[in-house]
Amino acid sequence: MVIKPKIKGSLALNCHPVGCKEEVLNQIKYVENSKKYKGAKKVLIIGASSGYGLATRISLAFGGSDSDTIGVSFEREGSKRKVGSAGWYSNIWFREEAEKKGLIAKNILGDAFSHNMKEEVIKYIKEEFGGKIDLLVYSLASGMRTDPDTNKIYKSNLRPQGESLTGFTFNVEKESMEEVTLSPATEEDLTNTVKVMGGEDWELWVKALIEANVVSEGFKTMAYSYIGPAVMEGIYRHGTIGSAKEHLEKTARDLDEVLKDEKSGEAYVAVNKAIVTKASAYIPIFPLYASALMRVMEEKGIEENAIEHTHRLFADMVYGDKPEFDSEKRMRPDSWELRDDVQEEVLEIYKKVTENNFKELTDFDKYKTEFLKLNGFKVEGVNYEEDVDLEELSKLKP
Image 1 (cartoon, helix red, strand yellow):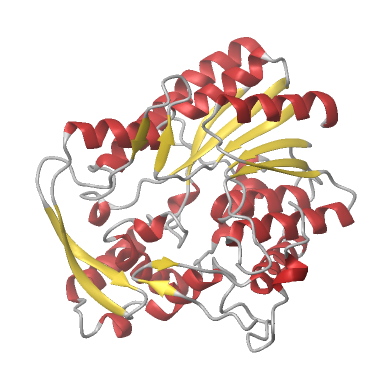
Image 2 (image 1 turned 45 degrees about the vertical axis):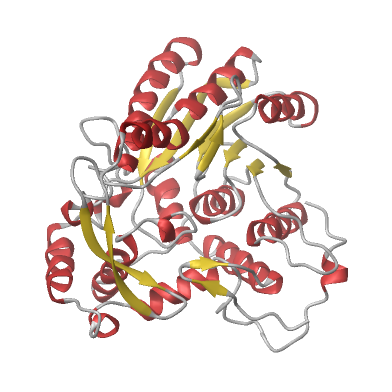
């Protein structure tokens, strides 16, 4: 079966398993040829199958720490007739490469928000993972959450607060720029988004792990967040998602106090740079900003994709000698993105961009390439005219 990308609007409908493998191998190769560091040996990553979560797992396993990892994710399995999700294959390819190195790379698939998942992970840590973990990275991105106590379903809603917001976004399928107007969020929208994207589940994970006595002395936990510049404030920091991130950051401060007292540990949020991820592609207005940012940072020689940014975060900051914290104890690897000279040039592009010139003013081609790479397309070294044997791939186990 020859697999070609299927896109509807800005939603990818399929993936290329061989491309997913090559992309994992490319990220591993980058890390192996980059700065080395010594970090946690036993790591749990919630949301480990793509974007920053997958990059975190690769950096920790292949960047000098030789970390054993447990990756929790929710992915669609492939079959003899249907291609599974990109994360399904990325999990498998990562595990295979890590095991070649003699590392433990356990993939546990299911609903990370559920009590059952927490119990399953804790059981595995106790019985097969050495009994304790040193690091928990929370990198979960989901549009929906079922409350584990009430079974009520909450759906996030990415809207501005207070008044409507009009801006431009990309239609990747049509390679066009389209104007969107977002109505202001209701109180229910705000509550639901905080419930899904805030820090509640992260806190439940940390407390469950502590109560089960499966965290080591000096245990560290971090969650990924984003702040962004003034041009993104309407949809991001001043929108529903911004309230969710504020809740996440408050959770970090609360957890930090708990861990200091109980484990001499720490908790904080790492504020990452804007990149193309499966989650960010859904955020209205964000794609246009990200493509302008790519162009400016590329011209200045400081552009980073997920693995480059994540590896710098761990090698220089988390386990290095160049940590950058702000006054609210948020780690700030996004400082390159928010440099004054970068943002001034991005804003100039933003002021001039139209539906007719956006491909010339921004780096739309790079944006689309990164979007396709998330699902195994446009990856160097892959022959996309060759048949993919789905029956053989269906034999793979996570």
